[in-house]
Length: 517
Image 1: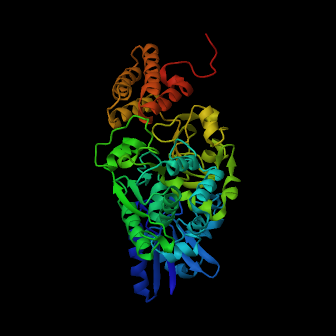
Image 2: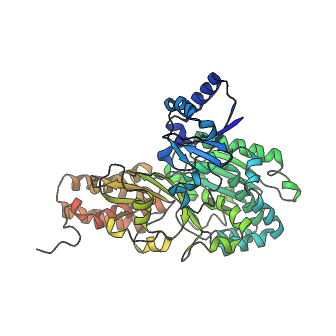
Image 3: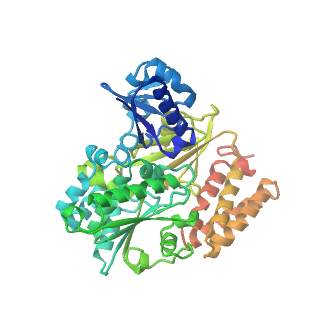
């Protein structure tokens, strides 16, 4: 029986994957052929979705992008034996976009059935937990600390230090909270893991629970991810039935269980303390710090809050060892980062690589430049609150410290590309408007500053007293940056000020480098 692999990832579903599956099944029936269709996650080459793969003696052969209308001709050409066809891509690992990657966290995405524990274990799953149980809590924390793993949600805080703080806190109960509230524009790594390899997240959270003495974990996910929620909830049930979750995990004496909670679409709930408020059934409003969540978090107990990618990276750290993970990267940015390419780009998708590539390599070489074929003018890194980079900054290495030195943020790894038709003054206004809409309203700099900022940017765009109004926007940004309670108000100045600095001509100022008159 021929075995075919078709993604059920949201990106593939959006371009007709279900119709492709239906067409394959119908065509096989019409021809009297037996086929097995395995639904996987996506490999992350979105411009080639729907990508269909077939198992052959030489390995899996890929075809794409496949539409339902292509299925009959694929069967005619010999799809089931991997034969030649205009859509034939060959071995996926030989494709330049995949071949250049260092896939660790995403090693199984697009390859395994996301709800098969057998597949997961066959491809290295649960080796990290097995080793963690031999190391014990202190040994796990030491391993994670020495790996150099940092928070992949934006702040870049060392994961091992956070875990040790919670482990050292005295309490009757502790929690692990996974922040999967992936609200940044141009990001989808969390969703890809939840849809394509949910057991790696479950394993990572279980290791974290053992390390700090927590017995309960929560995955907080945005409501806009129904497929991710469904797949992850089912994976939790499967793991629990297998004994890999719940009481006395695999006979180890450790207890740990996980529950998925769904948010109501508030961007501010990506901020850790607003997330905790929402988890407790309250309105998502930012808490003042201190106390830190590591001391007094969910329900007033010590809580580890990590981004999904941070937790999903833990199993590879434990299975391969801290030294192997720390050997990758640049400076204090160790390991790999799932870079998510979006916007006006030819090759949009997920590219996992060690820190150190330059921004220019990522956008021009890996991403292939703009889809329109026009010159790249601006790149926004780190979501809607990330800074805009001009082509003059394309030599910047992709690592936390280098981006900070350039007044930018890596954030969750999103990179959104714009061509030379973009109006950067309008982009600056959008940042203020976004903050005004999404603000929880607790602090005045964010609540009022963003509203006034959007109003003033409207005047700048209309050409009213542009220089005076741009200066007013800069003053507002300084107030928001240093006076806001959380990163929503504190980071909104990044896109605004970077747009003014790098693209002054859109604000009625002389271009950078222009001779003074």
